[in-house]
Image (cartoon, helix red, strand yellow):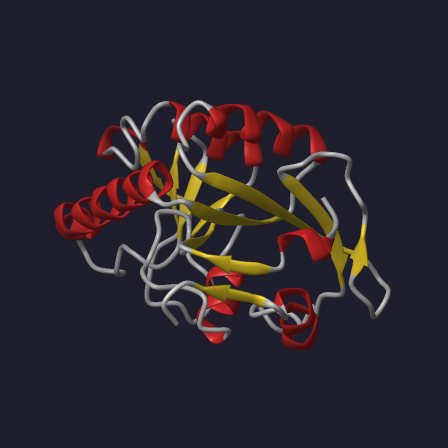
Length: 208
Protein backbone atom coordinates (compact mmCIF):
# COMPACT_ATOMS: atom_id res chain seq x y z
CA UNK A 1 0.00 0.00 0.00
CA UNK A 2 1.02 3.57 -0.65
CA UNK A 3 0.21 6.44 1.68
CA UNK A 4 -2.46 7.62 -0.74
CA UNK A 5 -4.17 4.22 -0.43
CA UNK A 6 -4.87 4.66 3.28
CA UNK A 7 -6.48 8.07 2.88
CA UNK A 8 -10.17 8.05 3.69
CA UNK A 9 -12.64 7.66 6.53
CA UNK A 10 -12.52 4.87 9.12
CA UNK A 11 -14.96 3.57 11.70
CA UNK A 12 -12.10 2.81 14.08
CA UNK A 13 -8.54 4.09 14.32
CA UNK A 14 -6.34 2.74 17.11
CA UNK A 15 -2.76 2.78 18.30
CA UNK A 16 -0.99 -0.55 18.64
CA UNK A 17 2.15 0.88 20.27
CA UNK A 18 5.03 0.69 20.71
CA UNK A 19 4.73 3.62 23.13
CA UNK A 20 2.48 6.55 24.01
CA UNK A 21 3.34 8.67 20.97
CA UNK A 22 0.79 7.23 18.49
CA UNK A 23 -2.09 7.55 20.97
CA UNK A 24 -1.08 11.13 21.77
CA UNK A 25 -0.90 12.06 18.09
CA UNK A 26 -4.23 10.41 17.30
CA UNK A 27 -5.71 12.43 20.17
CA UNK A 28 -4.16 15.63 18.87
CA UNK A 29 -5.54 14.97 15.41
CA UNK A 30 -8.98 14.05 16.81
CA UNK A 31 -8.77 10.54 15.39
CA UNK A 32 -9.20 8.61 18.63
CA UNK A 33 -12.61 8.07 20.21
CA UNK A 34 -11.58 6.06 23.28
CA UNK A 35 -8.58 4.56 25.04
CA UNK A 36 -7.21 1.28 23.78
CA UNK A 37 -5.14 -1.41 25.49
CA UNK A 38 -1.87 -0.35 23.83
CA UNK A 39 -2.17 3.42 24.21
CA UNK A 40 -0.24 3.99 27.42
CA UNK A 41 1.97 0.93 27.76
CA UNK A 42 5.22 0.03 25.99
CA UNK A 43 5.25 -2.99 23.69
CA UNK A 44 8.76 -3.46 22.34
CA UNK A 45 7.85 -5.99 19.67
CA UNK A 46 5.03 -5.95 17.14
CA UNK A 47 4.88 -9.73 17.44
CA UNK A 48 3.66 -9.20 21.01
CA UNK A 49 0.63 -7.38 19.62
CA UNK A 50 -0.07 -10.32 17.32
CA UNK A 51 0.22 -12.75 20.21
CA UNK A 52 -2.07 -10.74 22.49
CA UNK A 53 -4.75 -10.43 19.82
CA UNK A 54 -4.45 -14.10 18.88
CA UNK A 55 -4.80 -15.03 22.57
CA UNK A 56 -7.69 -12.57 23.01
CA UNK A 57 -5.64 -10.88 25.74
CA UNK A 58 -5.58 -13.97 27.98
CA UNK A 59 -3.70 -13.14 31.22
CA UNK A 60 -3.09 -9.60 29.98
CA UNK A 61 -1.38 -7.66 32.81
CA UNK A 62 -2.09 -10.48 35.27
CA UNK A 63 -0.57 -9.72 38.67
CA UNK A 64 1.29 -13.03 38.67
CA UNK A 65 3.53 -11.60 35.95
CA UNK A 66 4.09 -8.06 37.25
CA UNK A 67 7.38 -6.85 38.71
CA UNK A 68 8.65 -3.40 39.71
CA UNK A 69 11.24 -2.17 37.22
CA UNK A 70 12.23 1.15 38.78
CA UNK A 71 10.84 4.60 38.07
CA UNK A 72 11.64 7.50 35.78
CA UNK A 73 13.04 10.71 37.35
CA UNK A 74 10.19 12.96 38.43
CA UNK A 75 7.52 10.36 37.74
CA UNK A 76 4.76 9.65 40.25
CA UNK A 77 4.38 6.09 38.94
CA UNK A 78 6.42 2.93 39.04
CA UNK A 79 7.68 1.34 35.86
CA UNK A 80 6.05 -2.07 36.05
CA UNK A 81 7.13 -4.87 33.73
CA UNK A 82 4.74 -7.61 32.71
CA UNK A 83 6.88 -10.68 32.09
CA UNK A 84 4.43 -12.91 30.19
CA UNK A 85 4.16 -10.64 27.15
CA UNK A 86 7.08 -8.37 28.01
CA UNK A 87 5.00 -5.22 28.44
CA UNK A 88 5.81 -2.06 30.38
CA UNK A 89 3.36 0.10 32.33
CA UNK A 90 4.56 3.55 33.35
CA UNK A 91 1.29 5.35 34.16
CA UNK A 92 -0.85 2.94 36.16
CA UNK A 93 0.77 2.16 39.52
CA UNK A 94 1.34 5.16 41.82
CA UNK A 95 4.47 5.23 43.94
CA UNK A 96 3.18 4.24 47.38
CA UNK A 97 4.23 1.93 50.17
CA UNK A 98 2.00 -0.75 48.66
CA UNK A 99 1.84 -0.33 44.90
CA UNK A 100 -0.30 -3.46 44.56
CA UNK A 101 -3.20 -1.62 46.25
CA UNK A 102 -3.97 0.02 42.90
CA UNK A 103 -3.88 -3.26 40.99
CA UNK A 104 -7.61 -4.07 41.05
CA UNK A 105 -8.53 -0.73 39.52
CA UNK A 106 -5.72 -0.90 36.97
CA UNK A 107 -6.58 -4.47 35.92
CA UNK A 108 -10.23 -3.55 35.42
CA UNK A 109 -9.10 -0.70 33.16
CA UNK A 110 -6.78 -2.97 31.16
CA UNK A 111 -9.51 -5.58 30.69
CA UNK A 112 -12.11 -2.99 29.71
CA UNK A 113 -9.84 -1.51 27.05
CA UNK A 114 -8.85 -4.93 25.72
CA UNK A 115 -12.46 -6.06 25.32
CA UNK A 116 -13.41 -2.77 23.70
CA UNK A 117 -10.55 -3.19 21.22
CA UNK A 118 -11.61 -6.74 20.33
CA UNK A 119 -15.22 -5.65 19.92
CA UNK A 120 -14.22 -2.83 17.60
CA UNK A 121 -11.95 -4.86 15.33
CA UNK A 122 -14.53 -7.64 15.11
CA UNK A 123 -17.48 -5.38 14.34
CA UNK A 124 -16.29 -2.22 12.58
CA UNK A 125 -16.35 -2.16 8.79
CA UNK A 126 -13.23 -0.03 8.27
CA UNK A 127 -10.23 -0.12 10.61
CA UNK A 128 -6.83 1.56 10.70
CA UNK A 129 -4.26 0.27 13.19
CA UNK A 130 -1.25 2.52 13.74
CA UNK A 131 2.08 1.06 14.85
CA UNK A 132 5.25 2.97 15.69
CA UNK A 133 8.40 0.84 15.26
CA UNK A 134 8.44 -2.61 13.75
CA UNK A 135 9.49 -4.62 10.73
CA UNK A 136 7.56 -5.45 7.60
CA UNK A 137 7.84 -9.15 8.50
CA UNK A 138 6.18 -8.49 11.86
CA UNK A 139 3.45 -6.49 10.13
CA UNK A 140 2.77 -9.38 7.75
CA UNK A 141 2.42 -11.74 10.72
CA UNK A 142 -0.01 -9.31 12.36
CA UNK A 143 -2.01 -9.15 9.15
CA UNK A 144 -2.34 -12.94 9.22
CA UNK A 145 -3.70 -12.84 12.77
CA UNK A 146 -6.12 -10.02 12.00
CA UNK A 147 -7.40 -11.76 8.88
CA UNK A 148 -8.84 -14.49 11.09
CA UNK A 149 -10.58 -12.04 13.43
CA UNK A 150 -11.56 -8.90 11.55
CA UNK A 151 -14.77 -9.10 9.52
CA UNK A 152 -14.46 -5.71 7.86
CA UNK A 153 -11.67 -4.01 5.95
CA UNK A 154 -8.47 -3.18 7.78
CA UNK A 155 -5.15 -1.51 7.15
CA UNK A 156 -1.94 -1.45 9.18
CA UNK A 157 0.10 1.74 9.15
CA UNK A 158 3.68 0.90 10.14
CA UNK A 159 5.79 3.93 11.08
CA UNK A 160 9.53 4.02 11.64
CA UNK A 161 11.94 6.93 12.01
CA UNK A 162 14.61 8.29 9.71
CA UNK A 163 16.89 11.33 9.73
CA UNK A 164 15.31 13.18 6.81
CA UNK A 165 12.73 15.92 7.28
CA UNK A 166 10.08 14.41 5.04
CA UNK A 167 7.60 11.57 5.23
CA UNK A 168 8.89 8.73 3.04
CA UNK A 169 6.58 6.09 1.60
CA UNK A 170 8.32 2.70 1.44
CA UNK A 171 5.63 1.43 -0.95
CA UNK A 172 5.40 -2.01 0.62
CA UNK A 173 3.79 -4.46 -1.78
CA UNK A 174 0.94 -5.57 0.46
CA UNK A 175 -2.70 -4.60 0.13
CA UNK A 176 -3.19 -4.21 3.90
CA UNK A 177 0.11 -2.69 5.05
CA UNK A 178 1.44 0.82 4.52
CA UNK A 179 5.03 1.31 5.69
CA UNK A 180 6.48 4.80 6.08
CA UNK A 181 9.45 6.65 7.54
CA UNK A 182 8.99 9.95 9.37
CA UNK A 183 11.31 12.38 11.17
CA UNK A 184 11.25 12.29 14.96
CA UNK A 185 11.84 15.01 17.53
CA UNK A 186 14.16 13.37 20.09
CA UNK A 187 13.45 16.15 22.58
CA UNK A 188 9.71 15.44 22.72
CA UNK A 189 8.12 12.15 23.71
CA UNK A 190 5.13 13.37 21.70
CA UNK A 191 7.17 13.21 18.49
CA UNK A 192 7.19 15.49 15.46
CA UNK A 193 3.76 17.11 15.15
CA UNK A 194 4.33 18.34 11.60
CA UNK A 195 5.28 14.89 10.35
CA UNK A 196 2.28 13.24 11.97
CA UNK A 197 -0.05 15.93 10.61
CA UNK A 198 1.31 15.46 7.10
CA UNK A 199 1.02 11.69 7.33
CA UNK A 200 -2.60 11.78 8.52
CA UNK A 201 -3.78 14.50 6.19
CA UNK A 202 -6.84 13.08 4.43
CA UNK A 203 -7.59 10.49 7.11
CA UNK A 204 -10.78 10.97 9.13
CA UNK A 205 -13.02 9.17 11.59
CA UNK A 206 -16.54 8.30 10.47
CA UNK A 207 -18.99 10.53 12.29
CA UNK A 208 -16.47 13.26 13.16
